[in-house]
Length: 124
Image 1 (cartoon, rainbow, N blue to C red):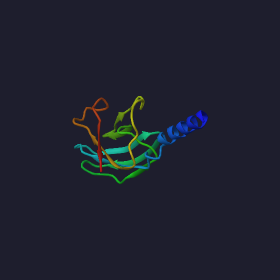
Image 2: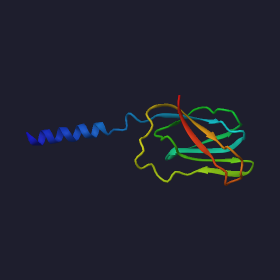
Image 3: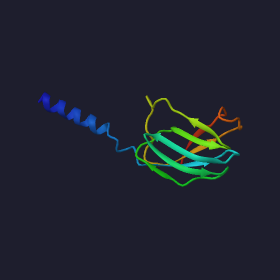
Image 4: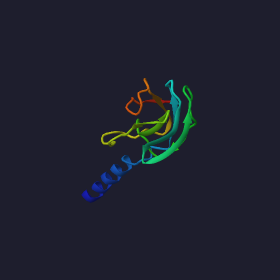
């Protein structure tokens, strides 16, 4: 009897930890800066997508990801200078639930490659 209860507990634990609540996640980009972005690459966890170019004030179409977090790797170019957000890891982070999201990207001031690229997550 104890073995049956233990087996049930293990099965319930495995089901509770499944990835069914995560993904697909749809992410679009919103350029809220005053600068045009070129060659935008986004990887919110593992998968990498090229969003191409996005003019100031524009919003991209959605791209599908199997799993994503509230932030991720982003690389883009402004006037020939590369800007990057490089996460170290996702330890302690919870993946985004299924749904549509917008990564709002901003560069408050153009300072070449040492300028600041910021990301704000918006749930659509």
